[in-house]
Length: 189
Image (tube, rainbow, N blue to C red; front, side):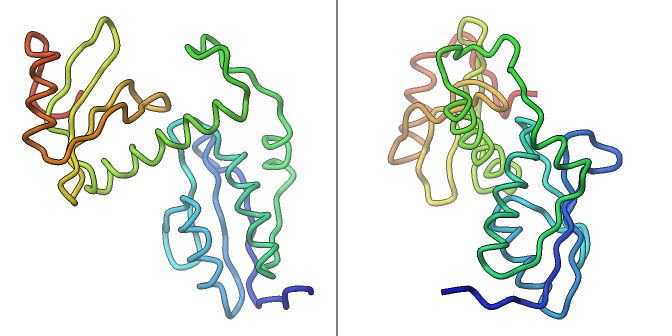
């Protein structure tokens, strides 16, 4: 069964000033439906008709193509500009990627989880209380709004939650036991 078309049009393009970012320009009487679907996939509103996707792993073209496929399934006309298509089709390697055994898809899974943590910090859902150096790797401890404490390992596209705790006090106590000598308050600069 074919999904009926929705009167919405999305044009995906590379951002004019930020090389890896992707813009989505919306048109049509039902553009708010497309707006909501794009927001659910990591795009952020600039205004009512424009959204931007910017990620810490610089994999915007990959995630934009996934969003385009999802919009099409929902019956929304989606256009990918030639410039963005070129970025999507470009082969890449991640120089000096520390988990060299990972496949490209596994690398994307790791960085997508790191993106979620980054977004949680940026939007205030996760508060980082302290950080420390662990043999050249940044580690941190934080709390989600629901009170769950987490131990974070790594930075940016490599950040992972490696342990969780029932309370902020438990998380901070465990972190201090491990990193008392190098522990510093607040997030890593």
